[in-house]
Image 1 (cartoon, rainbow, N blue to C red):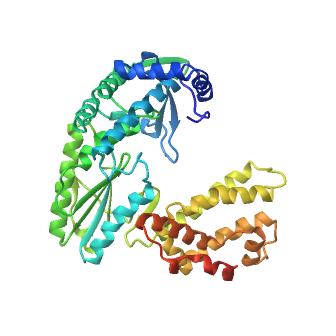
Image 2: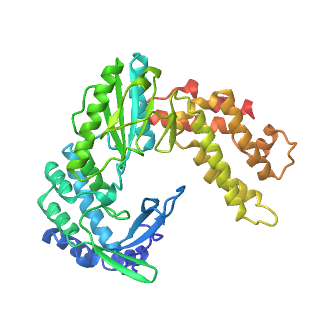
Image 3: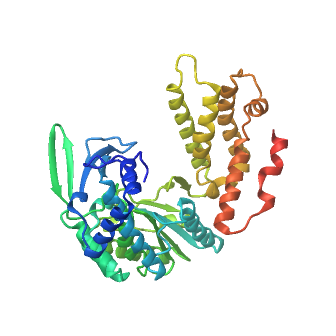
Length: 439
């Protein structure tokens, strides 16, 4: 565990616990194995000290939904969590009990694969002249409202080993959270929820949500999730079939939510059509008609109706510029940022921000308008990195700063990510041979 993680109420940091494990490995092993044998989770490790973190970008911080509670837990308790949750995951994977369309908190999966899976279905439908829509579903306070009886039902379904099942039962029994605010301390006993900050919480949430992903939905419906971000894709040959399939699927989803004490919020649910004819469909969720939106943000990537990703490129460029300007404010404000600092910020922060999920949208970087937008933004960084005049040409600035043209960098990352997603590579699309001529 990272020593930078904040400790729980016992104030034992990860480096202290690691040193103890190094000096007394047999003692720590015997304690953890005894907990597994007795199906006992020590009470001292069950108390979470809660810190309230404001969510970024919220307009109203007087609402509780604008804050995220993070639980600080004892390190040894998180170690025991990691020990039993790895056994649960191993058992479920060996028996093929985990849904393959849950991409969050799973090994060898990422956001790129989740978006690619959804887009593959949408593009296939468009190639067959079918109508297609996507519905991004919002679960209200998903982790905080995870219902423990639903968890144990799913643990029985995946045939969880008896000692691990008993340990998890004891893990949720008499759990407490402590909050300090305005000079007062409040203690509350938990009756539901997966603590954000715990080691096993994400996997336990996945186990609960897998029941929805395993549900049989009408033909033409595909449902997937990344943690608590649920996406429903519906395709059909006609508007009538699209309405019928989507409304029936949403009814099943809402009913499942009620059965496990979860609520799907219609106000934050987004509906987008990728074919013009699909916009006339009447889509309802829990008695509320959903309105079509021109774009939807899925796992950090903006999907527009035509899938040309122009708005996404504009958004990441603006984000990169804001990050750069903020970082420069704290780097020698009197004389300006040092060129080495500029270069470090560019390579370590800006480039990863721009190339995020390039395997999904990177193919549009070869378009002239996209190249121009990326080049204009990159030119500013290059001139600052070399402390050059504004009259310096873009090619000279990039060469002196040793910056690879950004559109080529995006296409390079795109080629690598697509090779991983598709299992094949296309050497004709690789931009490396054109790099020298562009410089």
